[in-house]
Length: 249
Image (cartoon, rainbow, N blue to C red; front, side, top):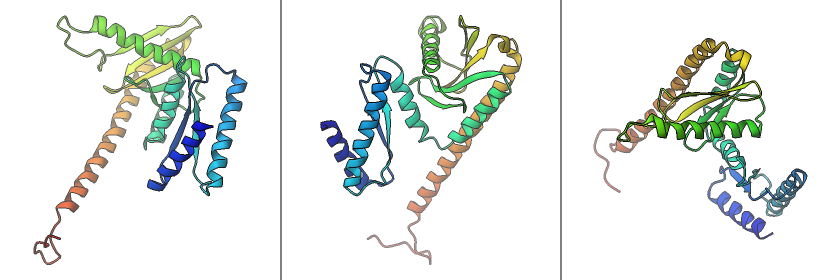
C-alpha cells in the first residue's frame, strides 16, 4: 500500500509537469510467486492504481505494468518494450524483419542492442521468454570469446565489429545465427537445421536487410541534423523585417 501511495504521488506530480509523459511501472521481485499469483497480483495493483487516479479525476492517464525478477531476463524484456515505444522507426524495423524471415525460412529474429541486450525490434510472431534468454546468452558468449581470442596481444581492437558472426547448433535441430548489423546492433535468428542448409540465401537476404537498416537510421540522422540546423537558424535570426538589428530586450 505504501508503494501504491508513492506511485500515485509520483504519477500525479509528473503528469502536471508533462501531460504527454509515458508511465511504465515495474513490479519487482515476483520470482517467489506462482504464475497464477503473479497475474492476480499484477491485476490487483493495476486496479488499485487506476482507482486512485480515477478518484483524483485523472482517469485518462495510462499506466503500463511489467513483472520483473532478478533471476531471469524479464527485466531486459520489460526495458525492451519500454524502449520500443520511443523508437519512431519501429513499424519500419518490424516490417523489414518480417520480410527477412519470410524470405529466408527463419522462425524468429531479434534486432539487439549488443551492450544492454535490449531488443529494439522483432518480427510479428510472439516472443517466447526462453527464446529471448537464449539470444541474450548467445550475445554474452560471442562477446566473451571475442574478448579472449579476438583482440590483439596489446589489447587493441574491439570484441564486436563488422566481421562479428556466430553459429550455435542446439540439440533440438535449431540453429542460432548472429550477424553484425551496426557497431551497436546485432541480428539474432532462430533457424531450423534443414532451412540453414540454404545459408547462402540467408546471407544474401541479410545483406539486403542490413543495407535497409543503415538507410533507415541514415534518414533519421538527416532529419535530426536538419531540425537542429533550422532551430539554430531561428536562434541566430535576430533582425527585424527591414534588416536592422533587433534591439536587446
